[in-house]
Image (cartoon, rainbow, N blue to C red; front, side, top):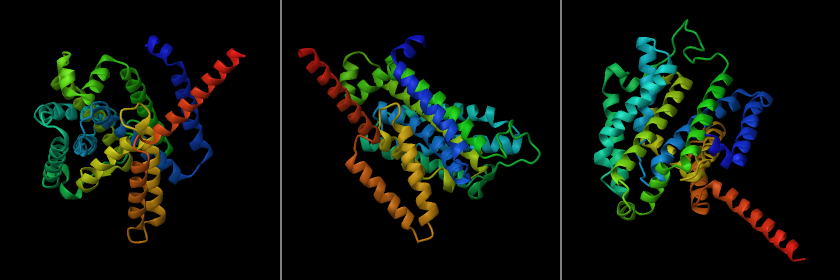
Length: 336
């Protein structure tokens, strides 16, 4: 850990600076809508980082991660509503269940490639949604309410002050972000990048492609499940129509793609931009018969078309030009 911090001092100093801003900003802008928006950004940041493991680093584009999002959400809802289990426990239970599901279905699914894999994951998620719609013990089509009267708000994560949700979610985001940063230079992620580049080449140098793809899928499922659990706890109500749809799967993919796939910080930037556009267009344009969805779709298309490397690529290019100019001036100064 010390070695990782030592090799990335600037990154961790930047993280601390961003964390200070993230803590102070809602104290300055004391608007409930902004607080709720910040909480949703944190949820989608977690989800985006989760999908990025399998889609960004490993190159296996899954269009069915709403399955794991839903597993996390339903695990928290059902265990709290029926058995009064604290979400601090059930969040991890949902992650474990998602890992088991990913392990079982990942092996056959990951034998498929390209669009066939993407369509197959989408079909799996849709099958799960239909099952949840038709099973009364998970609330059926009407869903599940999580709210429980008289419980401790901190033990059951049912805060009276909405700002508390944001700070709790922020802790999850920072923890997962640091974990991804540590893994970014690890052998595991190096193998994933090699598999993404060329599976045959990866196999030729002795990498067990099937094993590492499955590990990436399992890890991705667990993180996305945590995001789903946090979302359910924030709304205190879930149903298949809002949790396990194709729209959710596409939002998960877009969050990572918009920020920059295969990067550490990209999904967080994607979550900030995508969630902000989505919520503001919904609130201010939703009354105009779908105009919010049209504007939202157009903006997403424009960003994806004109910034294919994601928003992070803009910052990376700027830093590269800055470093190049700095090096050029140092060389020129040395020649004088």
